[in-house]
Image 1 (cartoon, rainbow, N blue to C red):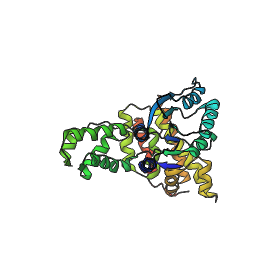
Image 2 (image 1 turned 90 degrees about the horizontal axis):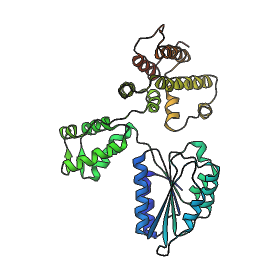
Image 3 (image 1 turned 180 degrees about the vertical axis):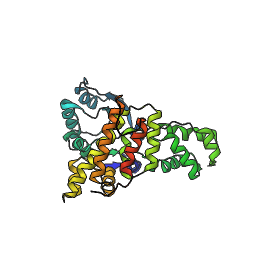
Length: 348
């Protein structure tokens, strides 16, 4: 069974009422805070149901996977139920590990609860036999990424847990300061609960308390480009520059998005379905939907011109004299990203 993170509480409540947990939980996601909270919730429910023993297996390339079978069989004389945690930070168990996990899932037994923690799985990983076996044996918990559009409501819900609230301006202020750093967002909410009593927080209280701990991820930049969010592009670029991100990496990310759009545009203009072109270019989820809308703004000529400009920026980054661009690489990168966010001249 597959559930979103926000549905996990319901699954655990039903298990508690029934007095039995599914034998396997897989917690998959790239938000460390939410992943840890999900695992804590599962462990807490398990302890309440008599799972008194716990083995933690931290796996790496040299891990001996025979330890998994030993842990599942090794109940002590004083415990009837046991938790076995498998931490797989790479998300890649290798051939031996994949076979061990598949066998473990197929032979799951009462009294042993297995929690497998791993990063977000891509489409190819989801088709692996070991992943399918784990999901069939229990519950796959999908940890959803909290993007900027969702962050203010997420903070509001966290404040509500502490019997606090804040105005829209105050929530936006917090979100701007902690963007991309969910653990810091959680810490700021906890700090506000310690500093101020229950009730509505003023903007002044929030601004006096919250630190600027935002982190900008260069790989989120394509989403801002595809969604046409110029303000987000300006903010992300300024943040990346302030954090000392490498110009060649930012240029590569933008250029890859330009090339992808050019391939999509060529396929669609040739009469092919967008869905087929999206699959061919490994687009899915929000990025697929945004890319389809972005195609209405861009032209083949505009994308080709942007790629030529990217070549000039590459010369600039390497210390060579560019022919047709400004001497400020970050200004040029911003304009290059904006070329996708804004409607291009329909000259071709």
